[in-house]
Structure formats: C-alpha cells, structure tokens
Amino acid sequence: MTMEEHLRMPALRSRVMTAEEAAACIEDGMTVGISGFTRAGDAKVVPMALADRAKALGRPFHINLWTGASVAEEVDRTLTEAGVVARRLPFQSESTMRDAINRGDVMYVDQHLSLTVEMIREGTLGHLDVAVIEVVAITEDGYLVPSTSVGNAPTFAAHADKIILEWNKRQSPLLEGIHDIYMPHARPNRAPIPILSVDSRIGTPYIPVDPKKIVAIVPTDREDHFVELAPPDADTERIAGHLMDFLSHELKRGRLPSPLPPLQSGVGSVANAVLAGMKDTRFDGLVMYSEVLQDAVFELMDAGKLRYASGCAITVAPHNAKRIMNNLQAYQSRMVLRPQEISNHPEVIRRLGVIAMNTALEVDIYGNVNSTHVLGTHIMNGIGGSGDFARNALLSIFMTKSTAKGGRISSIVPMVSHVDHTEHDVDVVVTEQGIADLRGLAPRERVSRIIEHCAHPMYREMLWDYVKIAAKYGGHTPHALEQAFAWHLRYRDVGDMRQDVT
Image 1 (tube, rainbow, N blue to C red):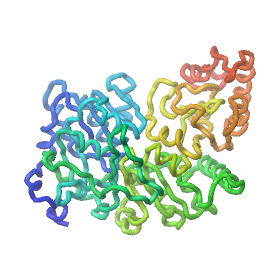
Image 2 (tube, one colour):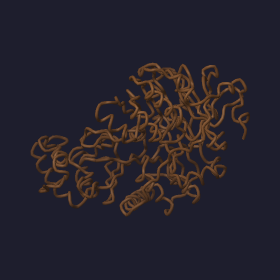
Image 3 (cartoon, helix red, strand yellow):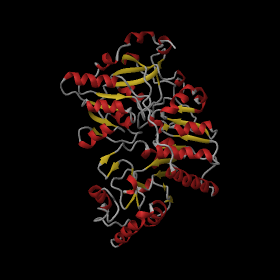
Image 4 (tube, one colour):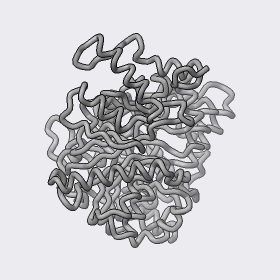
C-alpha cells in the first residue's frame, strides 16, 4: 500500500518527518504518554531519538512517562540509561527500569490498569503535554487507526496538547477494522457501557482526534518487540490439569453454565500454558474477555475451541507473530481490540461473569495474594489488570508454582510480604500440588485447604508449626506477628526459606 492509501488525509502528509525532528517537540519537564500494551503497538523510534537527544544535551533532561502497560524492553531501558524518566506509570516490566525504581531514581506509580484514564480525565495526574502513538493508518478525517494494541492511546490523544504519530509500515493493514474505540462520558452522569456479550461492538474502528494537534508523522518499519514464552513444563501442566478438573466439577454441579462464561487470562508463561491446556479438554464454544491475547488464544481458535476473543492487545511469541499477522484474515471476524479501560472495566467484567485466571508471586495461609513485590519491598512489574478482574469476576483464580529458586522459596507463606489482592478477592488458589477452593470459608477454615492442597510437601510441616504458634494468640485471623515474616527474613539473610539452612 502507498503512503496515500495509509495517510488518507492529504493535509497531514506535509507533517511527515524524522524521529529526531519529532523528538524535538518534547521539552524538559514534559509529561509524555506513549502507546503500547505488553510490548504490542508501542512507540518505537521517537523514544529512542529522545534518549539520544537527552544524551547530546549534556545537561539533565527529564520527562514523566505514561503508557498503557509494558512497552518494548529497549524503550524503557534506553530511556532509563539516558536518565530521561523521572516518573513512570502505570506498569513496566524491564530490568533496568525496575532497578532504577527500586533504587528510588524513578518514581513509579503502580496502578490498576482500568483507572489510569479516569485519573487523567480528572486531572489528578497532572497535564499531558505530548502523546506518541503508533498507527497503521490515518483516515480521511484525520482519525487514527491503531496497530496491535489500543491501551490508553485514545485518552492520551484526547488530552495531550500535541500528538506525534509513528506510522508503522511493518504492521499489517488488515488490523484496520479490528478495533472498537469507545470512551465513556464524564462522571457522574455516565451512561452504562453497552457491552452485553464479548462480541459487542459499541464504538468506532478508529481513534477520533483533532487533526490540528498532530504535529509530526514518523514513518517506521519495526516489528513489535515480542519475547518467547517459556514452554509448558510438568508443573504448569499439572496446574492446568487441576484447573480443568475443577472447572469440569463446577459444570457437573451446575455452578457454572455450559459453554463456560468468558475467560480472562493474565500475562506470562504460566497463564499462557494453563490456557493452552484447554485444547485437550471437553470445553467447546469458549469466549474470552481479557486484556492480552497471547499465543494460546490463537491456538484455541485454530483448534476450534475458542469462538471469540475480546482484548486490548495482541502479544504473541516471535515465532508465532509472523504466522498470525500474515493470516490475520482468518481471525479478523473472531476478535476485537478495545481501550484498556473497557477491556478491564469492572462494570463489564461483573456483567459478563468473567472467570479470571491470574498469577501470584506468593499466597499466604489465609488467601491473601502478593503479585508485585519481592520480600515486600522490591517491585517486579506491577499489579497490571489483575485487580480489575479479581475483584469483579464471577470466579477469581490465582495460580503459582508452589516453590521458586530451586525450592529455596515457598510460594505459600504464613503472611504475604505485600498485599495486592486481599483474601476477599481470591476464590481459588492453584499450584502444581493441587487446588484450594476458598469460597464460603472463614480464615481458620482456609488454612488447611491451602496448606494441604497447595503448599509443597517440604514446607507443609513448617506451615503447620506456624499455625500452632499463631493459634496461641487467637483472633479471627490468628498470626504470630513476631514470626509472620521469619521465612522472608531467612531468605533475605541466608538465601533459603527452609529451616536449618546456613
């Protein structure tokens, strides 16, 4: 396709320029919102040019960086190494950025992904100066056709003073028409979001903007920076098996309808492996209402198991990306990409009765979940959208392997070192050891379910020892506060949670 076919508003073609020229529009102290969600559809060249410009200035140059979720590792890494980022939100997943955050060099605001745009509208986060958004096309009216994600791009475009576009010629033109852009009206007089099924389309296939705000269009030719997921292993296969057995049991007892309600799956190798495990089950006619459409989504479509998928981004391993994008016509009619405030909206999640499947770093004996902080202090990535789904789902499931670091860490602990999801938002916990259904149980009743079904055998006796000590102090949720974090302290000091290890 020619430039004229992609950039269909003639008046905007004069604004085509280099990444370096576009980056000059961003000044010290500005707040910049860039497109992207889990490495898909993110701005790729303007941030890199901005880092080069900052290095060349020879003086401090800082911006506040807002995204949808994680962007390509090279973007966060390069901007961090150049000392450009002063404040970052609402999600990240890059090691250099993570280290800077944990040192206190970058102020990181970890947010529920459905809430960022609400705070932007209200002015809570401050003013947005520039939006940098990847597109596959610009319509005759100057409206924007996003690429492989939507994220927060519609709100960034609406509230920024200036818009810089990265027109990515590498992204498939077949993406046009796959998006459904809907932005709720202002509160308190907001109408209900009229999504009644996962395949409801309620908006437009483009992001409406004022073309006068578009100050630069930068042609690019770069693929999304996807990464390979770890393949399923024996533990993830056992987790998938336990979960499939549980869902089958719920169907037989009439506590879930058939076909199953919409599924949501978190990001990462464990969640992807569990979802892929549905290929070899009796479940048919599946639908998804989720954030990220990972490899397993397309595997389930290919297998005839998944009828329709609603998400915010397409994020697949590099070895699958080319095949999927080259055959996008096979999936176009069976999927939709929405803004993240809609894909993660509590109203819609509650209405549709979503089954939410997310991953945990650690779970305690009462069902509280830590999904973000190592030893309660050091951020990993962020809460992402898991909280949006966990609190509002029909069924909230958290998955983790029972141990980490070769058994030196137990994922089942007396008390989580940081709470992202309280016991009130956790229905089911699954490890390779088994499954604990916590619904309707008081805290004291959850203890035996979690220890006996989810903890690794090498840690069960230690957990029961803690329970006996905690019982002496009584209470609705018994804890021995002097020992609640003893396991974490032992790992911090000697590198192993197990007793008698030096």
